[in-house]
Amino acid sequence: MPSATFQFPKGFLWGTATAAHQVEGGNTNNNWYKWEQEGHTAHKSGLASDWWGGRWKEDFDRAAESGQNAHRLSVEWSRIQPTPDRWDEEALERYRSMLRGLRDRNITPMVTLHHFTDPLWLEELGGWETSQVVPLFEKYVRKVVEALKEYCTLWCTINEPNVYNIEGYIRRNFPPGKSDIKLGLQVQANMVRAHAVAYRLIHQLQPETRVGYALHFRPQEPFHRWSPLDRLMRNVKFEAINLAFPSAISTGVMRSPLGNVRVPEAKGTQDFFGLNYYSVDTVAFDLRKPGELFSRSFFPAGADLADAGMNSNTPDGFFWAFKWAVKTYPNLPILVTENGIEDSTDRLRPRYLAQHVHAMWRAVNFNWPVKGYFHWSLVDNFEWERGWTQRFGLWALDIETQQRTKRPSADLYAAICKENGLSSGMVQKYCPEVYSKLFPG
Image (cartoon, rainbow, N blue to C red):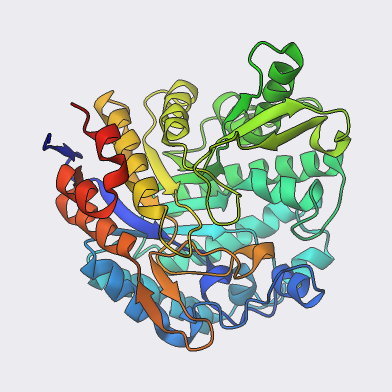
């Protein structure tokens, strides 16, 4: 039986990722709280993972004991600026305490400034549909960075702007629950402008910092490669989902199937590329689905599926995502800002984790500049419109008692972090079913 270790470069970042509304609990002043109360979600967030109540301390202890040296978290705009004319200094001090807590545990923080949620007062002003959001976001970013820059030099401006747009303005799963593709394009353009403004402001306040954004990158494959219609729909859907933000930042022109938008001030406004990768979609032409751009997305028969069938275990797509990122942003450092699988029984997560870490190692050995990996997620959290039906955590959460229970994949990830690599022994112990795939011969 072959024995080896896939080693990563010295200084590689190994961490987990979380988001404020998903773990804090008690957020009652943002659009997602309102969305929950209106009955649009499977469950309500409630206490979530009770980080606002202080349980971040024990979860950060778990991360540190697991050998993690980085953590990505977000701050909640509606807590920091509860009304347009008021800043909550106590909320900022709580976030300072969290970042100090990470630093005290030798964990490097990455702070995300916008992760899906908006203050209710901003929603009442028109949210991201109106251009006035750009100076409002700039004002908020200035306040946060001035307050937290002592502890953070790694910033993510906006998380998954493409998901915010698709789920809120096409599929109606996110607030504001509209079906208006053109309005969604306007929202996306305003997010690009806000990112560009934030990028320059952060560098003005903190010249030595690194600033980027996190893109949900979802590769697409045509159902029938011989079918020109399937290939066409794959290309349309790939561009619609993946290319608006990257094209704006690489060229200054935001590309869209509905037309292009010039945003010249956005060109070159990132110091790293944040890659959120989960799975690959198969796409087929379908006249019955005009709302999905006359296509349907699905997983092929025999796919290695997660609990809810929302994602599949497709590590080749992860490698392809790195290849695409290097081609789109030559020589720009890549940070995997999210990667994980929903799996309440932990039957799939160990092999998903091992195979995706191996795919990332392959990318590193092509000399592609992959510098870190943030697993989604540290502990089970509130998964947006899906509520508590999906469990992404390395630690399971009992939402009634707030008790955490370590899953086997937590031990596997701890071994990877401490070794700074993936060994044949780890695979043999935690996911022997994929041993021959990763260590053939």
